[in-house]
Image (tube, rainbow, N blue to C red; front, side):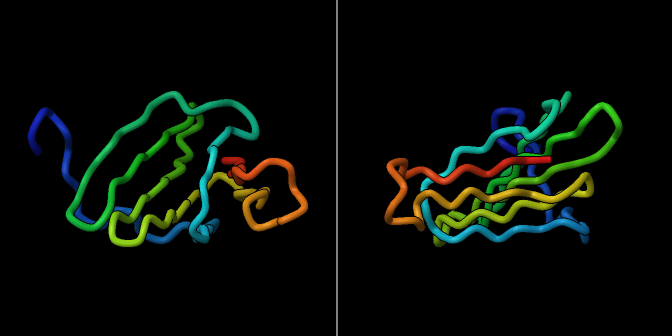
Length: 101
């Protein structure tokens, strides 16, 4: 266990059927359906990770890489949807939305 009760994990993500590597942009993460019932946070030298577990046991992982600020979202629950407002110059909203399954 790391400082302050924070768990430090090695690469525990494994392989997930649904993955999305996000381009650099500001993001807001939302749940498409019901929210998760548990969240575990971990930190390594390379990234911080939030692991969300749903009532049915499915998992959604959000990794934030400190070197370049990118995100990698993994899920065994379903598709991850990106509404890329930041990449659309016509959009009046500059923050992209990531809808988590």
